[in-house]
Length: 210
Ligand code: PRP
Image (cartoon, rainbow, N blue to C red; front, side, top):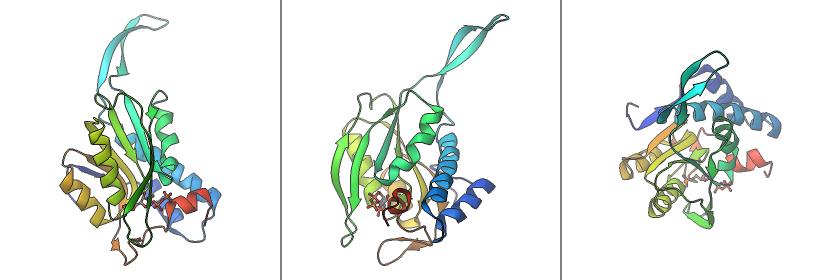
């Protein structure tokens, strides 16, 4: 897929870790480690084009020019599974704010149901990173982005681990100003709206609630 709005990560560590995540035999501890490693690589790409501000600093030897990040960063995990991607981003930007959006997908209608929201101030002039490991029908991402825009967010990036072509297309079409960073675009959705081949239910596997 060639589209400037989407970054699909191509990296041997990601390919190895996606394999670990996809396998049914992978247990919670190994699943968590693999998500953590991929999340670090996703975060690296998601933070790649951050604006910088120059500043003068003193090294032990002389004065020099340094840089600081010139925007506020707001991480917004879609609960629950999105929590699995938060720490990796915080490792790079320890002062990032974190807002939470609670949403689950109704098992019959496959429509997202909102149950919680708590967002920090500053969405208008910051970079909002919405994180959720699975982009399936795109319903949850669509709702989350629409809500964040209504709350004033202007610069939004969506980070997912595995995307279905259906969900990806939905978000790209509806929100041409939102960029997406993902580790894989899978084949399709099945009749239960699960990603194929996918990895099953990311939240259940990450939190050990299967
Ligand atoms: C999963 C996943 C996304 C959503 C993706 O959440 O983490 O939030 O479904 O599906 P969609 O693109 O079709 O909306 P789930 O409902 O399993 O909730 P959980 O995170 O609490 O496990």
